[in-house]
Length: 453
Image 1 (tube, rainbow, N blue to C red):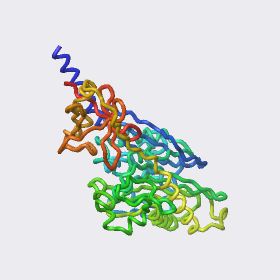
Image 2: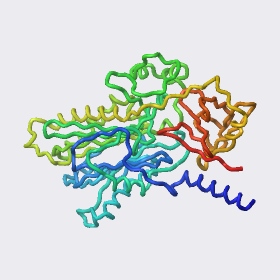
Image 3: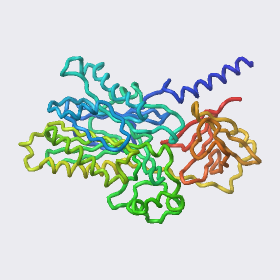
Image 4: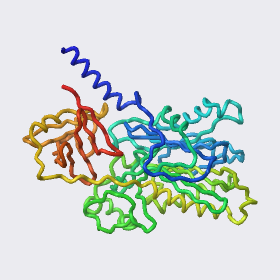
């Protein structure tokens, strides 16, 4: 019996360990609650996600080679094949643009799409038929989740092979699966990927963006699109107020605690596409102009802690003689406006903090049942104990578990049967299920398996 029990325990621990690595992960493709739809057959989009992260990848594939340019801002970019786009060649050579989470580990996704193009027979080893995929990553690791799963080759190729025309998932999907914004002011709001499309006559413009910015996303009227606000903030505080209030607006008592260490790793990666024929110089100017305009929607923008990258693509389907009234400058202005719409569409509904129920008194037997150690990964564990008829939790691994720290235990306050919360600026809901605990149930949940005694 002891041998069997030891085997069961070992198996459970192995499953838990695998949940924080790349083993046994199943790609989830093209999920969305809300989508942007548009008519542009040459461009096909696929998204893939690992819910265990969560983290993901977004692939933009063009059915024939297109001309592209790039503009890089901020102090921490992570890209693949970007320098090639700076050379200004007039021959269309780009096949795909890839965005991914996982920080530099996610760069694997870009080259994986290139090899998928070859493996699927769409490209080969001929000099003029080599697959060219470019891409950029966002930082979605650190304190925002309790594991280090990243978008790998398998996920990227699954997303590529699930590509489809005219459908783009909005919000926490694809590369934006675990994005956040506003860390500079302590907002730490959930974010995602956004897209917008505009057609004027035969001219088409599309903008796509993954917003993982240090700054706050700002509405067109100057209000803040999403933020977990400090309790001391003025009720009607606007982005301009926060900027004007520096440095005091970042201090406790005015706006909240200083920026956390992981809030310093941010990136907004974006793509603007037009069907208008453009030469390399015009396309480069489009990239610069649209990228510059994004400072209206994200404030501050392109800081030393951001790694912002924008790709500009011309599919070349609309000849100049077919569209003589619209100049490249006009396209830049319109595309900048479309990009602001795309940024705003990236903002998902934010989780609402659960409220404790002072009348609910869980019985001691129930508290004993959920007590124990829950393992999220090799570095994140949570010890839950029944202390005098109240439930307490303390991080016992190498890292804190969100607001539950290693230094001291915090009380879990009951909300409903089996569900608790931890008071604070940022929502932290703790739900106990059979053999596991779920933190912040929903789109951004983290799951820990109970260690068997």
